[in-house]
Every structure is written in structure tokens, then in C-alpha cells.
Amino acid sequence: MCGIVGYIGPKSLDSFLIVGLKKLEYRGYDSAGIAIIDKNELVVRKSTGKIVDLEKLIENDKFDGHVGIGHTRWATHGAPTKINAHPHTNQAQTIAVVHNGIIENYTNLKKDLINEGYIFISDTDTEIIAHLIEKYLKTEKNFENAFYQTILLLEGKFAIAAVSEFEPEKIFFVKDGAPLIIARNTTVKESFLASDLPALVPIAKESCYLENKQWGYMNNTDFKLYNWNHEPVKLQFILIDLKIEQFEKGKYEHFMLKEIHEQPSMIRRILANRIKDGIISFNEFKVGDEKLKKIGRILIQASGTSLIAGKLGKMYLENNSRIYTEADFSSEFRYRNPLVEGDTMVVGISQSGETADTIAGIHEAKSKFLRVISFVNNVNSSMARESDGIIDLLAGPEIGVASTKAYTAQLVNLFLFSLYLGRLNGNLSETELERNLKELMTIPEKIEKILNNIDPIIKIAEFLKDQKDTIFLGRTFNYPTSLEGSLKLKEISYIHASAYAAGEFKHGPIALVSENLPVILTVPNSEIRPKILSNLMEVKARLGKIITIVTEGDQEIIDLSDYHITIPDIEESLSPLLAIIPLQLLAYYTALFKGCNVDKPRNLAKSVTVE
Ligand code: M6R
Image 1 (cartoon, rainbow, N blue to C red):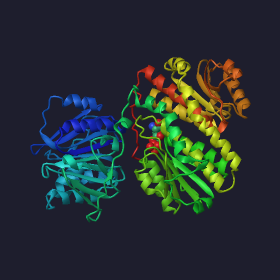
Image 2 (cartoon, rainbow, N blue to C red):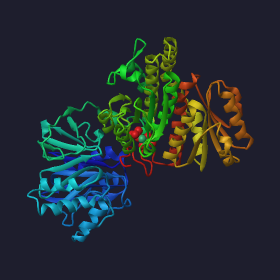
Image 3 (cartoon, rainbow, N blue to C red):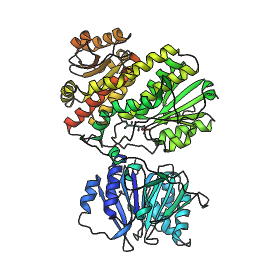
Image 4 (cartoon, protein in one colour):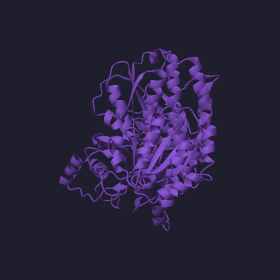
């Protein structure tokens, strides 16, 4: 949600900022802009739309500067217009700021500034920051103090970078609640900042993740970091060990397709990492077994796809470890004053580890003195640092806005964790563990089989692309599959898709069914199959178009379907790991055939860092 970059060094500034912003575009793509100190003068360029539009705007500019900041926006306050695009400046255009997050008290601050004669041109909360710095420059002895006085006034969640003609060799920055990384390459005297690592790979060599309420400034060789009392903080840089290929599409047309295809190798990697000689271990997890044995209840809180994984996680945990588990939207959990007891463990699940709603849920749990663990893909994220223990999803970087491989990584890790807890508290026998692990090991090959048979998926996508409404149905373990399948379809193809537990459908929503309404049912081989068959017949009787995700060889269901996609046979609890693959591909190809921007769907951002 909004991407920030900053650079000081010998390279062509506009090209670094543009390249960095392009790598962060998944965080927002409503508008973009840069601010450069060019021969001691501030130059700002901004445009609506994507980074390529900004790139076109500046193609004839000849900048001569080596200090600059950039921003790609996901609009919160104010429409995605050029005026509202970042960077924002003071009236004299001597100070420029970029900002990710929300300044919650901006209305009052803006009112005061207007009363004092400051003139605003945008509808954003960000613009107040430039005016406040200018105001404090009149009373404080230097820019550093003026920046500090300004940030002390701000309430909300933010990461901010600022450049100015008053300190032409420096970039000032602050982090409180939104991610910010500073980085360097000492061999060529370069300093960087960014809201996320992709912008820094492969140019920066070392990075330092800022903690909340840290701020400071950098020039090309040096960094100063302070706490909220303006006391120096020791900087700790770590080597960046990511490869550029992890952030590129390679032979695929879109990141989403690449990430869908990465799932077999990713699951093999997770299993190799977690299972040694039939024993499950989570090396990075620092909560001891004695503490885990005392858990009486688990409360999962997450958002979007991560919550859907959490809903399956609930079933895995209850089935395998018999620990009572709930799964709730973070945004609801945080504000509903949940009933908890001392032995309740709160589990956060997140790809980014920066989702504001989920972080707020962690704060809520901590305020109730509960143990908090997080399943995260970014082990340096805010969630990871604020949890008592973390489980690394090991999915590798996920760039496509629509989450795919992070979801299956969440399922595999949650399943393994449920088996681990089950063995620990004695609710799962050694034989059951062995059987489950054996079945899990077959998943990568079975996913490969699905990925190699996309013709039926393409045929259905061609039909779906002209539809306005769709319904997804599934039962028990595959109710979450229907939720996730429908989320994927609406996110990237903008086709309305509702998901229901198939058995519940007849209690009202079935009224929606009419001739040709596509109803997509997941029907794995399971005990509940006869019941799903009845649900299918109920739809068929009302002339709905039946599309099924069905086990190979299940001729009865295949014959009843207008369209079908087969998946290999698998134990029911693990069938969601197979059934979701064709649904991801179905959403992908439907969006593609509709001409939608698959990796950058409208109105969305990869990481939602506002509540
Ligand atoms: O980074 P997180 O897993 O916390 O993100 C949560 C949701 O914002 C995310 O899953 C969102 O729903 C995706 N766009 C789903 O494809």
C-alpha cells in the first residue's frame, strides 16, 4: 500500500527511482512521482496512472542530481489525481515528502495550518507534513529539529521520506507503523531507502529494517538513526541475500502465473525443510514445547486469503490436535473485545507481515497478555518482530497482487503445525502422523499433473469471461476452497463471485440460481461426496450451469457437469491443496481473456497497510 524509494549516490537518479518504483508497483499504482535535488533546487515530477506514465513524462528531462525520493500511490485521502500524487511540497516548493500510511489527526493539523496562512492544494493527509516542516524551520535551528518536531505531532501509521533545498545532501525518514528499510552499498558510496526489499535487490548490499518510532537521515555514506526522544540508536545492517530472479517474471507473462507454477517446487522445499526422518520441526520457532502443551484454545486472526487459509487451519488444528480453534477477520477480532483466557494462543497469518488489520489484532492480543505466534512470509516484517514466535512460510517472494503460492504455503505449514501439536499433546498417533506425511509428500507431483492439463481450464475461462455472476460451492475442507476460488476470480477478473458452504446454499442463496448461472462446485472423493452430489442436483434442477472440480474417474459427477476439471485422488483434508490450483488458473485465464491487468488489478494493493 504505497511504495516509497529514496536514493543518494552516483547513479542516474531518475533511472534508479523509476526502476525501484516499478518493483514496488504492486503496493499501489494509482499515481506516481519523484522529487530530486537538482543543483540544490527541488524538482518534482508526478503523473496519474502507472510508473510507465511517469517514465514517459520525464523521458526528455535531463536531471543533474544525486539525491531523490519517489512514490507509487494507492489512494486513501483524495482521488487518484495528479494534484494528490506524491511527493507533496510546501508552497515555496523547497521541501518534498512522500508518505505511506495514514495521518489520522491531519484534519485538525490542517485546520491550524490554514488558520496560520498555509495554502493547501491537495486533498491528501500528506501535504500537512511539508507545511509543518516549513513552519518549524522558522523556530528550530535546523532541518533535523524541524523534521523531528513535525513527526512528534503526527498520529496514525506512517513511513515518510523527505528531501529539501535546506539539506540538499540528505534524505530524512521516519517509520511508525508502516514498513521502511534503509540500505547501503559502501563500495560505491550509495544509500537507499524503500518500503520493501524488491526495490533494493540487487543494487543495495546491506539493509536495516527500521523499528516503529525510529527516524533519522542519511547521506551517501552515513546514516543517523534516533528514537522518539531524539537519542541515537545503533544501526544494524544485515546482508541482503535475495536474488534478482526471485523478483522477475522469467519466462512467464505475469507474476501470478509464475507463482502458480512455482507451487510444486515450493511445497517440496517446505517439506524438505520441515520434515527430517519423519519428524516435523520448525527451527525458527522459539516457543518451547512446554508452553505449547499448555494451549487450551487457539484464535487465528488474519485478512483476505490469509484468513481463508486460517479457516482451513482451524479444521486442521481441531482435527489433528483437538484444540478448540477459531478463525476471525483481523479487522473484526481487533474491535469486538473477544472473550479469551490465559491459555488462549493468538495466531496471525500473513504473507506480507505488514497488514495493518492483522498487526492491530496482534496489538489487541498483546494488550490481553496473550501469547502470539505468526505464520509469515516476510520474517523481517512488523508482524514477525512483534510476535512471540514465528513460522516462516518459506514461499519465497510473492509479487502478484492476487495471492497464490503464499496460500498453499500457509496451508502446508498450518497442516504440519497441527500434526506437530497433535503429536505433542498425544491426540495424534504415530501411525496417523506417518499416513498424513506420506499423503502430503504426494502433493507436489499431483499439482504438476494439474498444471500440465490446462485445456479444460481454458475452455471454462472462455465461457466465464462473458459472465457477470458466479457462485462457488464447497463443503467442510473445501468450503475455504470455494471462498478462495471466488476471491481470486473477483479480484482479477472483476466478475462477481459469491462463495457458500454447499449445504447451506439451499437455505436461501439458491434463490439466485437461474438458467445458465455458473455454479462452481468442488467435489473431492470423500465421505461427504454424496451430500455434495445432492447439492449439485439441487442446482441442476434449477438449470444452473454446473462446473465441477472433481476427482479423476468420478464419472457420475463428470456426467452431471456442463464443464469439469479433474484433480488426482487425495485424502479429503489435503484436497484443498489440489482443488485450489485449477481455481487459481481459472481466475487467471478468465482475467486474461477479459483483458484485465492480472498482476495489478484495479483498486487493490499487495500489502494493505491501513486499517
Ligand atoms: O499480506 P497478507 O497475507 O496479510 O494480506 C492479506 C490480504 O490483504 C491478502 O491476502 C489479499 O486478500 C490478497 N489480495 C488476496 O489475493
